[in-house]
Image 1 (cartoon, helix red, strand yellow):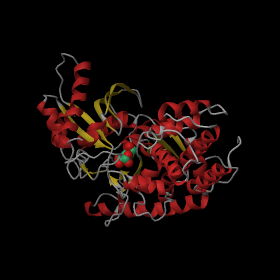
Image 2 (cartoon, rainbow, N blue to C red):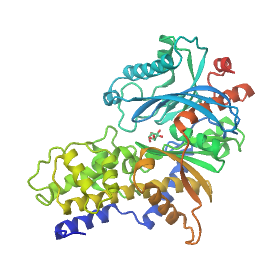
Image 3 (cartoon, rainbow, N blue to C red):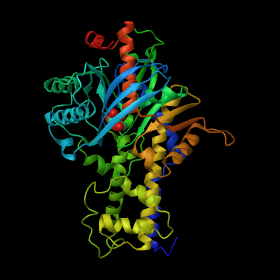
Image 4 (cartoon, protein in one colour):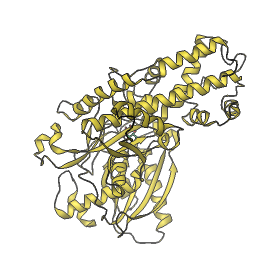
Length: 475
Ligand code: GLC
């Protein structure tokens, strides 16, 4: 380190203490996590919803047909048309991406559905100009916690990822979407409503049979895996065969909302308090892309307030005091700065915050970014480890997607290291649970799930399908 003033060194040490999650803590988190996953499957339920998805089993690679997929994630809206081809595991895809306007996230339900259907209509008009279309089955990736009594049904439990649109929570989201399609004369029918994690699980297993878990490390965090009906007490009343596979969308961003085990800092408490849904998504708020830049910002603001003059003396702090000004690409870019003297970080801080930082301040920011990124990666590994422990999986592949996984520097290596510590692999052993970049879950996964659903309709296996009759039109 350069000549770092003693006070700043002490601050770095303090940040190291609050943000470091050691092996003992990781194991405690995972032990509690396993119990909470179980609880979510019980009749009484718990913090983690463990939503039943009615996706029953993996694809065999021979699925066929043309499907639309609509992906409503946290940041973008994407419309795809996917053809599952004759080649085993093969597909063709055309797609368009639309930015989700910020104001839509806190607007009205009507605006949300109208905008969504505008995008689908644009897509159809562009790709199928002057064609007379017959009914098109749609896989709708709606990546929020939803209660599904059927695969073509989904009652929003609560908004996550900063969304706060009135009149949607507690409602089935399929009918208003289908109504908008109908009003515009679009011949589209929702064949399946899916979560991005379930899509990731299914799309990844399409090409790799060792895939047992689908994860998203992005704006939000979550995972899905395949459970046996016999291990889902809350489904006991349905008398399904005990060995029948059903994908569970864990919604484990809600892990430890009670704050029993997570090593929360005062910054995590502020994020929670000032969020549209305090008391919810505790695990997500410490690990997901939506929050990493904000945690970083809050830690710096804390220094400004608790130790006036220690950092950024005689500079204008207005921008730094703007909530959510920094997204996770900010600490990510700092971690990526290849230069020892942190020249890129210096430019970035100047551009984004209008602050001219000293070398010592730049070093402090670099260390802070590393600590926040490392904590996120290590805690993220706990969810994967907990599913493996719960299912007695000794070795498997995990399909992962999301901006933090694909873009945040060192996230994968740090997560892998944490899995090694939690799952106690011998130093001579290779990693047994490995996380891989997933196939496109929200697009191809949604199409595959729609295809699997239609296959079930054809076979008369109608458990968890509401509109089987209407779906026969596609078969
Ligand atoms: C949030 C959503 C969840 C989604 C995850 C990743 O946790 O509630 O449904 O899977 O973000 O996008």
